[in-house]
Image (tube, rainbow, N blue to C red; front, side, top):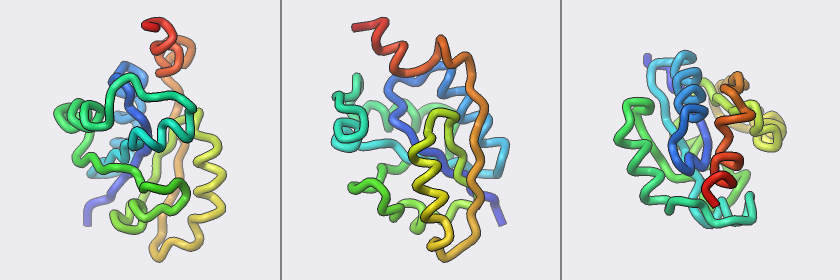
Length: 138
């Protein structure tokens, strides 16, 4: 049985930090599913419009050789339908996804399957973080 790993993100302009994040996540299993935040979710969570629309972010990530599947995020935060649907063995989170990690830790016991949460190492967070890269292009 293949070991499935799941990651979550906006992926607003695929940069070296994302590449490192995705490669680290892949090392925890056989297949990697990337859950991409929908535009409305980005607005709610980050109080800004993404630089690239959802369809472009999905297309770029799908065409990369970094993931096996790209799926949209749940329409409501914290519902975790996407997790229950795909049943990952591992959820790999970025070092800065602390709120998501805390919420997942409270919810993980309700999943009808075993699932591990791992936190990945940052890759030059003072250079390759989407918020920094975005402010350099504004």
